[in-house]
Length: 446
Image (cartoon, rainbow, N blue to C red; front, side):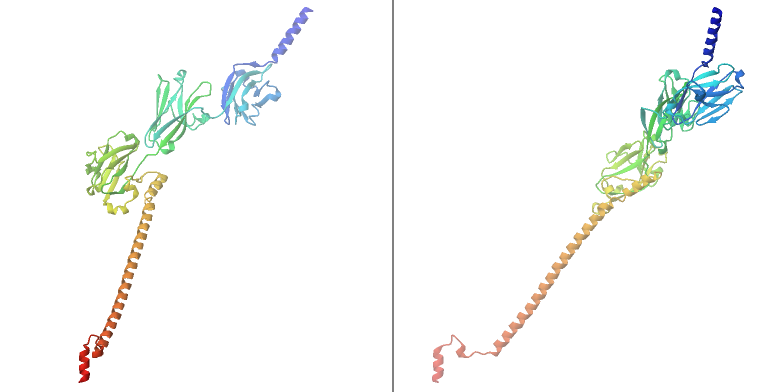
């Protein structure tokens, strides 16, 4: 009786344990939201011909997501490589709620064999902290990426964009692959690798990710935002200045030549011009930016007119220079000089600048017309008023002269008439008021 009870107990225990999954090692898998993830499950050679499947939770009939016979179902697909004895499950378009526990199942006599899978789905973005760096067009810039000490010997790389999921596939450079514009260096003491980008262009601006490969399948990333400043270039220009006043020129150079000695000379040819910087009192140089410097002539003279050249490197071995034709006018001719020259500020066009900067520089050369045209109109109005007043005054003088001539002629006519009357009239002695009366009596008596 006791023996029968013991046998029944063994049967019950075996039945209970047979219903429990027989698991191997746990597989840790990470995936990015919206991307795909591949889960590889290995099996022994004697299970080559048995059914394989992928399931979740308790792995009951309703929990089976896909079998090897189905190959594809909804967002799941499966493939079996019997030579390598590995079947692979792919989950497409991952969702954050796909995170959880899954099972790779292999059918066999008795309890099936299971491999546990831990899947974690994270957002495809990076990072909370972003490092801001700047570079100049035509120059170079370095991106520094830190990493943990235990990852000195793993693969490191840099890519453009903000999505870690495809960063390695889009890598601009890796620790085992160099390119012409990108150089990789690794300082293991400071646990920092550096990517240097040469010959920067305006298209290089944007987001970058530094990646460090991890055994877990989820690489470590740090984010960098790169700003590229436009290279200030100018070309040949004609400038007017006024005698006795200052004038300023802008001269361009590549950013990498910022620390080179600058030149400013006068002459018909670049290779045969006179250095003007020997007189620092009259000619003053100022570094405006990493790609522009200015030269100011403090007090213009008539003899300063001519052709000038300026640029980096006193040996003049570079082609990035500015040619300027200076015209000097006297103060009374200043009304024809543009306002930018009168104030000593000159804007020139760049031969290789972008269309937006060209239109901006071109429009600035026409700005003085806004000031010149009203001035000319006011002067013309004043001149017209003065001319009208002059003509009016002259007209009045002519009218007065005509009146005076007419009055003179009338007076002369009347005077002549008076004289004619006087000559015709001969007064009698009685008409003479002072005649002696005795003479009158004597004449009567006679």
